[in-house]
Amino acid sequence: MVRSFTDLKLTPVMLEAIAAAGWATPTPIQAQAIGPILEGHDLIGCAQTGTGKTGAFAIPVIERLAGPGPQPAAAGPRQGGPRVLVLAPTRELALQIAETFDLLGRTRRISTAVLIGGEAMGPQLAALARRPDVIVATPGRLFDHLERGTASLRAIRTVVLDEADRMLDMGFAPQVERILRVVPVDRLTLCFSATMPPEVERLVRQHLIRPIRVEAGTFARPVAKVIQVLYRADARDKTPVLLRLLGEERGRTLVFTRTKHRADRVARAVQAAGHRVARLHADRSMAQRREALDGFRNGRYRVLIATDIAARGIDVPEITHVVNFDLPHTAEDYIHRIGRTARAEASGLASSIAAPEESDQLRAIERHLGHPVPRQGVAAATGR
Ligand code: AMP
Image (cartoon, rainbow, N blue to C red; front, side, top):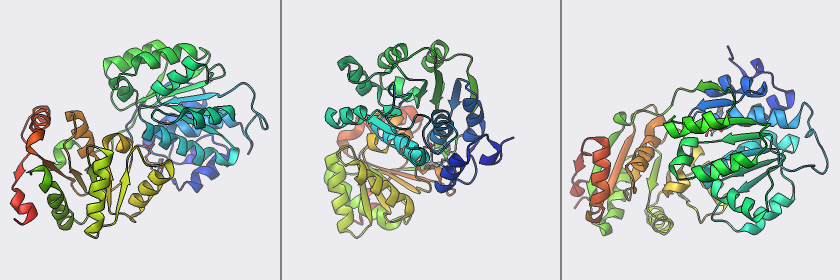
């Protein structure tokens, strides 16, 4: 029974890095997954974001990569190319994974290249030229690099498929399959997924060898426990409704908008109303996103305004209120968004502000939920 990180066969440097990260005890998925990965078993981890799953693979993967000393096993110029490949569905998640590798591997000079879509090729080529130990990539962009011959996977010894269900949902199955055929067969393969639909099972059957299965209880509150409220408002009345809600609810609030542009606009209005607010979307630099997330986590900002993609995978405890300033495109995104309130002890609140032109989305969401979202009068929210 693993109760502390010292119960695991970790090196003193790794224990120091974990302590420096402020992680006192392993989460359930870490307690179960780290040992088998260190021993070289393929592994399936049933765990969603927020369970500590990134550490569950980053800790043993770095240990295997770096060897016992404070320096990487092969100090000086790296031979042979990257040895670890992590595939993730979204850029945000890829960036978070790379941050965790930096956090835990910095003292051993583990270097990471992030290959994600929507960014210029130049800096990614430069990162590859520096011969990173680890590649963290979204499947589409890595596939582009392989097609162009700008990335080589010949030396890969460990592959991690993170949020496998989501990657397949997003239509990345062909790229993932092609990538798995290019990496050497003599490797370790780890697959993390919040759910295990048949497509993930098939992927696992084909590409993992006698994997060990571990499961982490989810921390997310069942969606049924989130209090949901719907405000019908014309598009121009959405901002007053939001400001009213922010005035009534004091807790940490995550607001979703449909586009980056709208996120910026809403943030300006929220700031003008005197709230401490940060923004998270794809046009913001990595440093800006990190600052926004850190500030939201440590309370410097009470309100975070985000687009779906940018918010995917972020983990912030104690979000008490999620506001859908715009309804999401799919019912799954709605469930995913409102599940963000789920981590607080107090029951979460999810408010949606829907304009008449969003009726189709609303119908789809309510069909998926199996019941209507309770309506509140807009007058109650705007004071009109
Ligand atoms: P993840 O599920 O990997 O996205 O991690 C969720 C959050 O938990 C991240 O902010 C991690 O920094 C944090 N975390 C991971 N492992 C631990 C741990 N053992 N103790 C405390 N926090 C952790």
